[in-house]
Image (cartoon, rainbow, N blue to C red; front, side):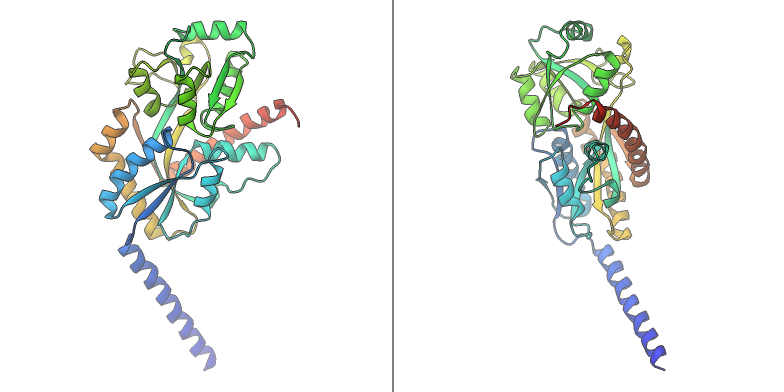
Length: 328
């Protein structure tokens, strides 16, 4: 009899929990949502995160507030997002930066503060090739000019990035290896400060992304020499790819939305459905395409598979770079 009462009690508790989760998912969201951007203001992630937030809140019926938490190539904000309550009210702007930083730690025998498995992929909305950029009045007018001079000055040309082994550093290492070039690196705390350094001629070049680079190029603040991708961008059809000069290098920076693991699946599915709506929303498409980028939507499952494949590729690259890095 006692066992029967205990069993009935357990079933009752389970039913209450399921009802609570179900009702919570139906009602969600009932308050503003925080979207952590693990990079500083002004960079690609910030521009796209704010575009997403402005459209997503129309479908969610609640404000989506972007909060910048930069540091350690996105690891500070990423950790905050991974440790947030799994209730759908704190989401994180995910990007290839996560993969880069995590795999770099592993390649150097260190345990990363979090991994991709600490998140549930909601979906991505862009998959942008990097752009090789120089100050507007740089002596380099073409990619061929740049490569020729870099070969004559090994280790002398200086580039900036948004952080060590992040999404604006690793593509240069890939490019340098493919082209047989050597450069000197100055890391900043994000893509925005790095772009400022290029415009101010504090560095010779950088690799950044269309949303932030192309408006500055149109304003004669910097020059785009090449696309580090498989094909030319529709928005800048006259700019060649590095492959057209015989340099076998590609690198893409995806940007999307992540939720902490253990977030209830009904809430995850609602966020996934809304992210798809955002990616198909004309106002969002205009905000992404006006600066020169392109919307590229991956649903949660597709993004998770992409991250898994990307992790293997970047892990192999980082293992080589770790061997070559100077030992302290």
